Image (cartoon, rainbow, N blue to C red; front, side, top):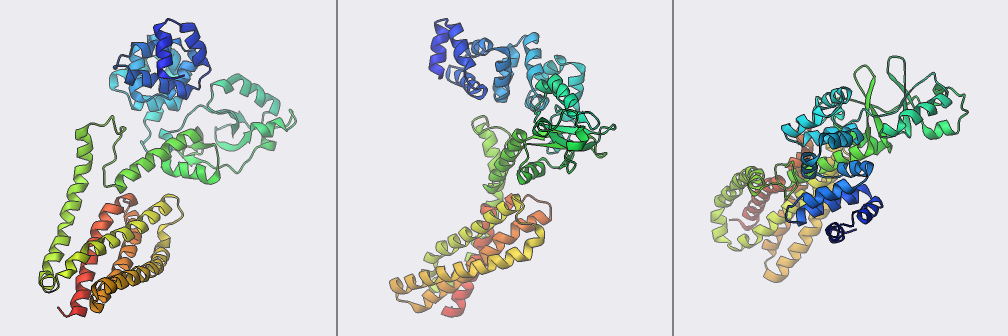
Length: 450
């Protein structure tokens, strides 16, 4: 169903038909429909709220989790306390925490006021974890079993509490002190005899993470081992929650967005593009632009040092953009691949010399190819063998230096606990530009005797 159809049915009071249509839709699609009605209907939220209230309660609560924070805040303001309590009761705890983190203080107070004491305690515990930690994205809603119960007793427990847990396929087996001792899947229990003790069929080689582990590292672990959920334990190996694959995907998306911003020399923003003001966009870009602009004065200084050579051979100026551009492109290629390799943990700091040596060999092949092509081009068009030799040798030196700088800087940044993404295209291009000019004019001075 599209927005126009929904608006038409609302206008003609066909609420029962609209409700039946909505019941057949996916909750994520309903969330999109609600947001479209708000943004395209003159910012009149009455019809949007009416559409939401037509939904069956369970479907409404599920669609609510797919909405952005602005839509959620509008609906919360329109909810009665009874409606708000129902929505919160239907949300998984980690979704509730994510929502609270995006809300202003007055909305947070109202949400917490409409939760039961136990839920409020769990929410506060999750909010206390560092922002980038595993504890901040975990959910405390999971199925746990004792190791000494039978398969039959386990299924009885799952039937009793499973509907309010985020996942029931994998169950976590705990000792009497709540320590994680194993996992068991529903499939394992289905094929086992109902009198079999859980400890006889559980998997004891459990992959787990600590509450204070970096959430990006946790997402990578889940991707590496291809697991749908991973248990989170405290320092005493007691399970306190789990992280599911949907939360891991959100983490990776946020981290990738942040890296893209840094690689483009932009301070990462928390909000979406259109929700960020023009002033905020400018403020996030100006610092790096100033740094890069001031660092580029080094390039100008180098050019001024070789004014005499340029005056003798003015043709040298026409090749400067090509030399600098080629160096910048080569450095960007290497840095992008190295940053990606480190992000996927294909490349580690101990591989520094191995990476540099490999990039050096790659650089030689690229450099010789580019030097031959450009040397022949200059020779054909300008009939000047010495100038062709200057360009060829300058390209060899520039490409080799650019590849090595592009490979080394991200790894050196990682070594001093900086984000390798900041050593991306703009900064590396600025460094390489200076190096390429030094190489170019030095080679020209030697060969042309100027």
